Image 1: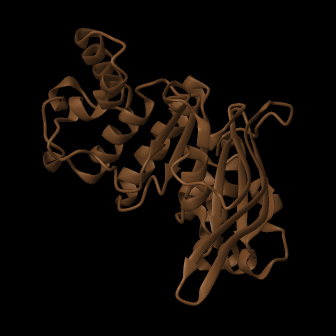
Image 2: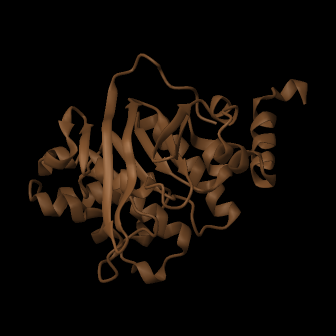
Length: 271
């Protein structure tokens, strides 16, 4: 697990009194009601909740792709919905299935955000893309491959390289290990942990995978009853009496993941 966050670090994402309301055949559907959440610099905060609690919607609102019905979402000191193109480059997003452009090569996928801004010469853009490709553990031999030629784990790594191409201080992850076999998922978590430490990233992650959750999270925020019912260290969250938390974390998979977490806390000399 990653070290606990600095409680005195400045706030990177500030969500206040947020409402998300969608129209449906049965009238208005309220997903979020007076939701509050603050995310501090340098932490890895994981969003957890049942189906329909709006976890990915919240990520998209932080990114500025969707707008809340009411309330404020401030990212790096600016309203998320009004981020300029350059300010928006301060937020990287890894979508669940990678969302690579099938007609582009690996290198062109990674370079795409830089090319869109048209601020650097092509040679520098290609060099930057190659650096990011190697940063995620893939060599230059993969640069000219098509996404169709990549494994699921490689697609995730290329998508991560693209998310990091602008050197954003804030990284959003939607189900980063979904669809990966256990070995690939472990390798991807190790990569994320290393990049978080080396780049000083602030990370907001949605995941259903309990191993990933306990492996990476410094804090967990649980969405239920249309709001964040608790946000804190993993052990603080698990101790909360809400029925969803008890069912989610204290079922068979949750117990196994927590046992692994406790084992990691035991020094080698005491095992």
